[in-house]
Image 1 (tube, rainbow, N blue to C red):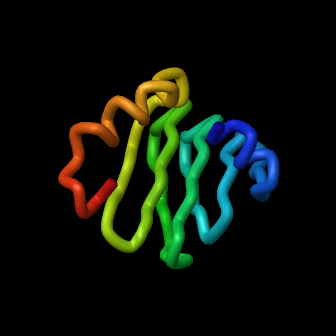
Image 2: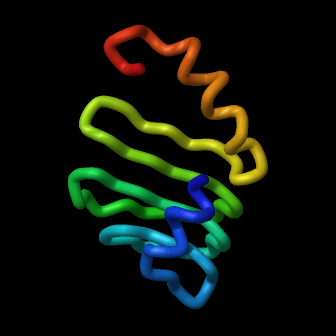
Length: 80
């Protein structure tokens, strides 16, 4: 789960977990993963999962993470 993965990330004082370069303002309890180390900025968002890879970007509410597998089934084959 992304919650389990986030336990290995650094956390800021607002509960945002990230594996990379994150700036967050008025944002709490987000999980951010960036495959390429790009700067990620959050403004006024809460309880999101943000995942950026070389060919895709996922943004979803943390409480909907179990639906990610349903979404993957709707993606083009080259992104699955």
